[in-house]
Image (cartoon, rainbow, N blue to C red; front, side, top):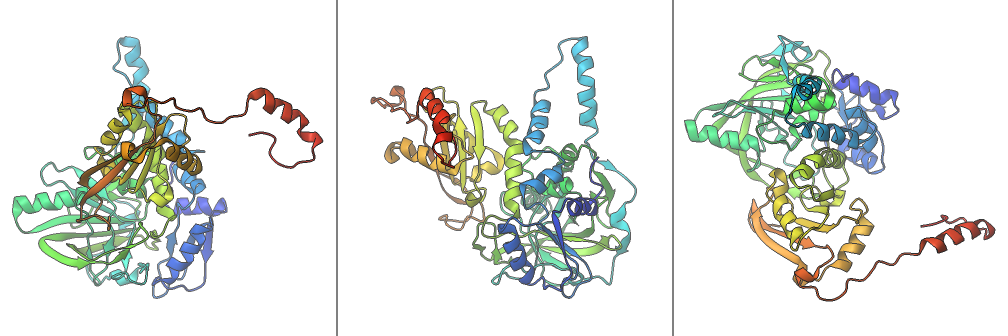
Length: 488
């Protein structure tokens, strides 16, 4: 049974011993960050701050900051269970006969149940305020000392493509400028930024409607983070994850729909001719992203539950909560990548690689230059195009083991021969690139080299003990009084 809303999931975490209530008054300016950072890095629980300073609204953070809580959020025993469901749907074949068509009916019915459905009203409209409201009522974090201000860090930002009318849900940080305006950090390559540019190109001036939902059941809250194709509705995929349709309600003042179970909804617009300096912001890279000019979001209506919870997250030097979100995305979308490129065996994005800096890919190599083909393929895939370094290894390398990757990759490369440098788009948050949004990327072919790739020497075997000797030592082990593992 899908979680009804955010508080339903919070209750589950509390029953599972995965949430700690904090009754001490704590300041959202820096103090909550320092507490959360220590808790996350020590593998601690989700936190519910009951008395944030200067606000009557409780704050919940680190909700998904462990693999166990991520599994609880998606109601699975392991993330690969979700990947298996994705794989099953990807494997649907065109029915060849009547019996095949009959067999497909349950699967098609299940697919249909995931589409979002519109309802007349919902808990997010228990309170409707078109005047006399302020963003200062909420315990919005100032995360790090050099931040430009307080930031909403886990919004579901909802816009429509002005040409097609299709909805997009994105997660973009929002710096609070005053009681009713924020920045809208639409990075150049994000769909929200594309909608903004398209609206400006069509109209030249005017307003673009935006709605922002904060706090929902975990699968819906993740909707703006998932790297799904632009033609796929994020709320539909959230319905797939939660195995139940996301209920949406129409906004009060803009022609958009938001999750009915949201805790807080901000309705408003961005002025197509207005930009304002936003930043700095302590980002997921572990460094501050610097100031830039971004659109301004004007809040014209606020709706919320009678006693809302404020959901937020923290980014900074890894690992943080966003690593566990990214790891879940890596596992869930691996079948999609493998469907496009069946030679891929596994993929890993270590926490220290902060998503865009490092991807390790194991492939079943079939022909000369295969590793370089995979590099080019990954650099052509959606958000994966930002990957700064791609390391391609053979199928028998465990990419989930950093020590094994470092050992085997470094032993497999001749740097001049195996490193490829290319130019292309980079993440806006990439501070080391020569220009914003444009720079270089590196691919490393760490596979075994073949004669057909110009390697004429014999590739050496890996050192392994023979099975007979290991068996004899296993039998002797109990006579030696050692407490080491029996075998390797």
